Length: 280
Image (tube, rainbow, N blue to C red; front, top):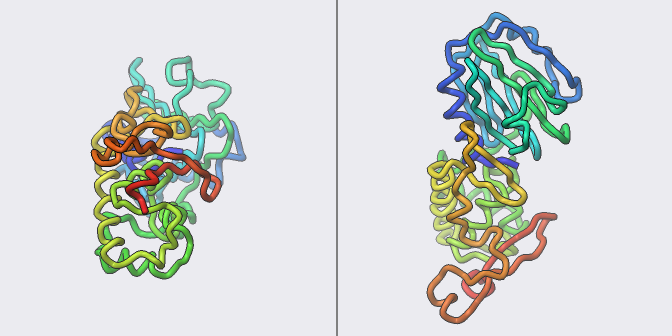
């Protein structure tokens, strides 16, 4: 599932091609995907493209935000004058003729066409999605005191709490693993056992890895297949600290010298990676 950096990359690219365009028509091929009457958007122009956590929002003004949640296999393909930009879960649809058998909704703008594809039909589209109202704040807007206050209230393992979108939004499996390694925190540590200093450092490191994710255009990994809107794979995977590195030597010099390798276990149903030596 795309996380904050992946969706931010999509947002930045769509901002370049959609703003100012008028929506001419909408074709819905899957009622399961659509949670709102999209006809109300016809003849309205795009004012901007936003993001709330992992949700992409196309702003049509007049308090109309068209929300997309990609879930596991959602993707957007935009075509204009024979050129194509793509984002989301990478499949052959990125290069095949559109629409495909996976195309759930087609948005015809006055200059180009936007296709929402979703193989497994887990993703959704909704105007002014109520889901967004439940999202916690993003780490970029939080002070250390605010961040500490959020996580000192739960005894759940810190990695599970970090991925709870109602506590903070946008952090998923990849960036939670790497931020915890950067902070030298065991993912299983109860959140309310962490000191203020630990949580202060964790906030700093979450911001670090998320900003790197945005810088490198997101990640392309085994359970987070992602490509940016030009069909180029994100490159954050080249900078993974521990995620998807089971059996490889820890990147910290002391651990590497001692031959300590990254281990994997399941926590909250998700693959969790950590160094057994420096994350204690």
